[in-house]
Length: 289
Length: 277
Image (cartoon, rainbow over all chains, first blue to last red; front, side):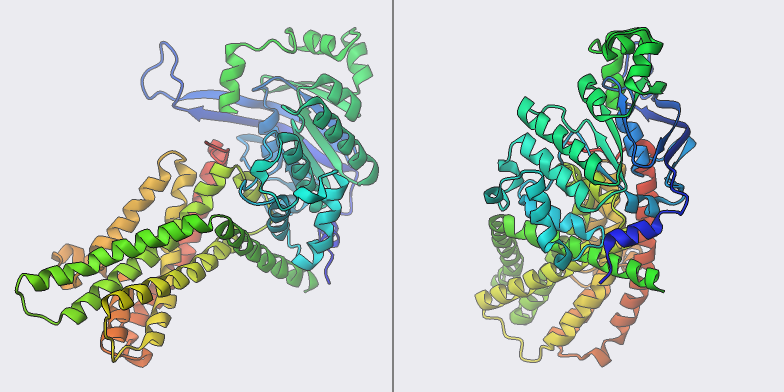
């Protein structure tokens, strides 16, 4: 029997120091909608979602990217998970280019987004089951693994056959984490995984992410606009503002550099605006990105 | 060699996953399926009743044969609708549920992803077509003494390859235009309906439409199935239909995959994989 994890690891090059390399990554979107005053009918508007972003991540490292709505966090995650094509620059996951080697990259990456995204009439077990097939896992391989992983995320045993639409958002997000972990990704992309959750569910999900850090060999990129979450879970924190990565350092270094007592103050010093303050332009950028 | 086998195995398991998912969904939406089947039966009966209507006007013809002729057209058309429907849902339904990004970022080749969707559509479609044909035959007590049903089913299966190829091409439309893509797909379906002789012989069409009919796999599928059921022809007598169907199938599948790939790249360049609805 072929071990999926073994196949995945075979795909990882021997040189394993750097997990993620991003160089001058750029993405812009052109849309015809939401015409503004002074613009001609049918004229397309361009918004730069990512503007020359560069950074690297070490294997096993957890990096948090902080940014407001429309800052480009989700665009970055989508580019790294091969769901978007960049307009400039490049990104590599364990040496594989996200455009040229997309299939190799897909074996290494999984993602949890702000929306749990499941077939809502299907149960958690059914959703996990078919999704794991896409990663080459047979029913024999997942028969025990799915209940185990649902157990690990503290998903109630008696609700495993219930349609997803009957579950709370917190529970759905636990299943999303289970789906991502089921495929043993070496790079886990978490795109606002706790946004919109009630405080208890939020804590449970954060606790689980912390456990993944301890027990898995995964590299984690966490995009969030929760400052405490970033500081608690990540070794380094990046500030992404309007498509530009303004800083990427450990939380204490960030505070020191911007002579701030808190991350919020550091964010303000770096971007020139309050963390929670979002203008029309941010909303507009979110629609594009 | 081991890596190649591992990749092939993973691809087959992945395609099986698409079938598995559709089985789960069919089970969950079973009453919707029942309702749809009843509607299809009613629609087919209406079409077959046309033969009775013509008979009542005093025209003399073999009404049993004409009813069977119309029934075959209606069943093949319903089958085609199922195939196209499932392939269109490859993108449209997944976008609605929000799972499309997870499917497209999985390490499953698009060819096997679409193959899984196609295999389920064919199996599901054939089961429904057989039921539909059976129910309507019983309703009208149609007599088909010479029918070669095995040959008819083989023709349907061969033509399915071409239908899947064309279906893949149309399934890319919701990827390019999330709002109107599904509706645009009906254009391809409607064009096949008009030119392929679903309810009348192709010979009654204007010359330019007869020319278009030569490129439609539905033309050969309908001719072949009608010859098998009405005249009792076997596969060895149906070469004129089987050969074009195979040729169209061999061309349409790779062409369909190529078109889908172009559409996928367009969607990734313009950020159109995101959920809508």
